[in-house]
Amino acid sequence: MLVGIALGILIVCLLFGIPVAFSFMAATIFMVFMQGYDPTFLLPYGYSKLNSMTLLAIPLFIVTGNLMNNGNIGDKLVDFVDAFVGRIKGGLAVVTTVTCAIFGSITGSAFATASCIGSIMKPKLLEGGYSRGFIGALLANSSILGLLIPPSGIMIIYAWLGRQSVLATFLAIVAPGILMTILLSLVSLFLLRKDKNVKVMDKMPLNDVAVMAAKRGVKAFPALLLPIIILGGIYGGFMTPTEAAAVGSVYAIPVGFLIYKGLNWKNFKETLIESAETTGVIMVMFFSVMILSRIYVMEDLPGKIMNILMSISDNKLVILLMLNIFMIIFGMIMDDVSACSLCTPILLPIAMEIGVDPVHFAAILAVNLGMGNITPPTAPLLYVGGSMAGASLDEMLKPAMMFILFAWIPTLIVTTYFPSFAMWLPNLVLGQ
Image (cartoon, rainbow, N blue to C red; front, side):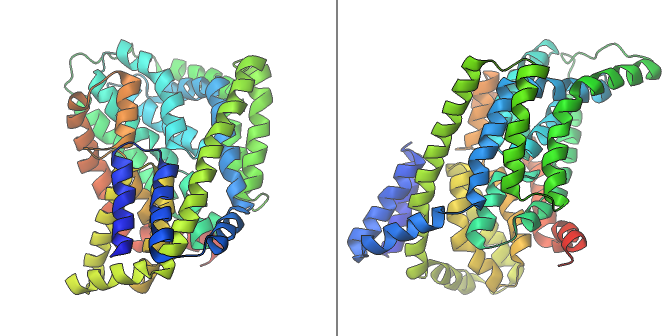
């Protein structure tokens, strides 16, 4: 009963706009006082969980994303992708999606991706005749590829909380991420095929396109080298995710200062301050989450939820459906980091109890939280996309629902009910 009340306090606080860290703290304080838990046990536990080299990757990827945002690195990625698909109807929408996927493979953050690529693509899309509602929905959906294209911030958190291999969880989300990129692009082209307001750039001979792509590729090479360094280092076994994040953040500094000249000492200082503030908020939230999740484990919340689910149905497929609904709801009311931090310790034991591989569950969790983040009525990332495009929820609702129905739901179904789809790459690379 008290566990349910604590969960209710958490949800109500989030719905009323109370900062996530304080929302978790309120639920934690309620359980400590009502159940009489000893703070001298819980506080050191929370601190000990934060004392992790794996977690150090989070602030380093935040720094990398902010440096890319302020260093004009994202602009070169956009120009390079535009050379290939910018001259078909709806091509700028595909450029936005693919660039978000590339940018997400560097930062691992949906919000950083929305901020950087949104600021670059918004004027281009408006000039091309795209409606503000479509732009907002597109940015919201494409930015979440930062969760599904490794290195993903929430996969680092999931691996840390679930005691799994970070590399294995990265590999598990590659196939869902690629499928989402393809489906989002196809849905965009379908929605825009008859839109008379969308402009099509003058077509060029194939040789001219190749020359332009080569020139832009040379300019974008330092930017494209960043994901190669990060992903190549991780997958090649040369670097841990934390080391790759450190190398990426250091590499982005001379590229931003000397090559693309977007960085100066003023915005470099602002970038570091902004990254430190974001990191501080996340770490305070982690501290509260660790204590609350420990209380939930001691109260056997996963077992209680499992008993409830089994009373409804003992069919594995039905239980997976209910877990998906649970994760989507939490993705709707809180950001991806918070939702992952809460869902992992509660739902992973249940998934393993019904025979789901924890690496497979990482992919299921990522797709669910991504979908929750753009599902109305709360949809935190949908509002971010709307604010970037200057669009209201009503304007974004139709294209957003089309993306959900024909891109997110098919990806979620395939990822959930066909384990080999997510697991073939971990099995191939790691021999699991």
